[in-house]
Image (cartoon, rainbow, N blue to C red; front, top):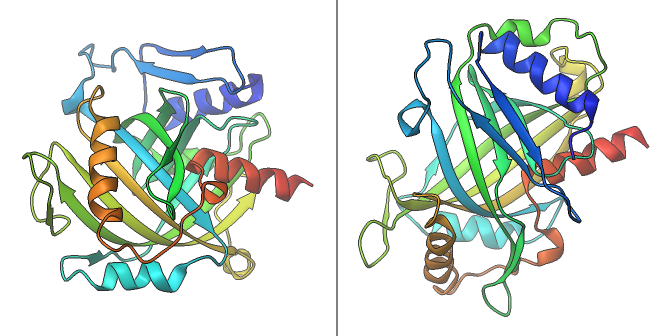
Length: 276
């Protein structure tokens, strides 16, 4: 659940980086874990925001490790000539206190707001692979003034700076039979991306840029994920298709549900550890 401090932090971030936005609504659903639904109703020009304005639906399953089956996963990616290695980048996340179902970050000059739209479900793919499947909606647009994000806030805020070095594989699910293509080779409306990411993360109780000294103390993690994308009512089934295709092809690693969580949940755990 987002408490008052978390809500004010999001509001400050949005207004500083995006500009005038007509309405943001957040609905908190009662339950074991509250679900947060964020809706952008219009931008400062008065036009409705839709897919063409950066709304993205996905269903994801993700694992985080300090050690884990790294060699086996590396082997799986290196076995595919179509896999693509990206240069490292840094994403800056504002940590919403006690919230595991929404995320707000600055990524390469864009502000991205992401919210979980369904309860997590345990997906047992095989005897060796299982994890929690989540459904998400993400809204993204260029930030009008990214530097203003790091101005002094009027309330305490906690930030996580996450350096990501990713290796990607991409599956098109537009036809009846899944087909692997090179990431970035063409635009897909329906598909699934596999991602292995080397992570360095710093949790700060201020929103200043981390120093070189801070990065030397960064925690090192790595993650593996599948992220299916397409129409909101189809992404769950698309993830199942992709998982059956990829994990049924002699996948070499064991991935356990105990290591499976979303980015917001992982960041919340890191923030709790840093505050202890």
